[in-house]
Image (cartoon, rainbow, N blue to C red; front, top):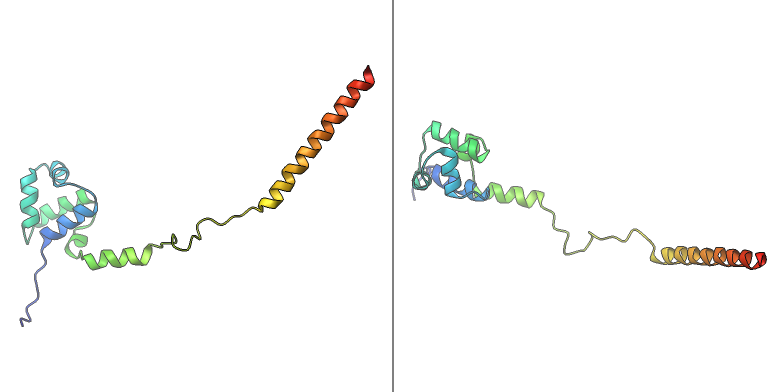
Length: 128
């Protein structure tokens, strides 16, 4: 086994961040003013010069350090630590009203409307 540390492949990291951002190579190429083939070659490169890395980081809206230190594990840890899935326990839809109470309230309003209608009709009959 070798004890040498594995070098960081910047091109793969750029590719992965671009994909996570939902950006195609063509879009990145257009923003950088280069061809899609050049972006493809960049993403195959193990190292990228600082000036190019800075431009790419601006387009991807991340810092050059974020690209250098990007790992899939970090992304999954962030997702796992921030995403809460409550769909299984259905706690999203608590009923905050009492349906029986609402039915009684509606019934009382209907009864009151009928009483007012009867009083109005009696008044009309008294006038004749």
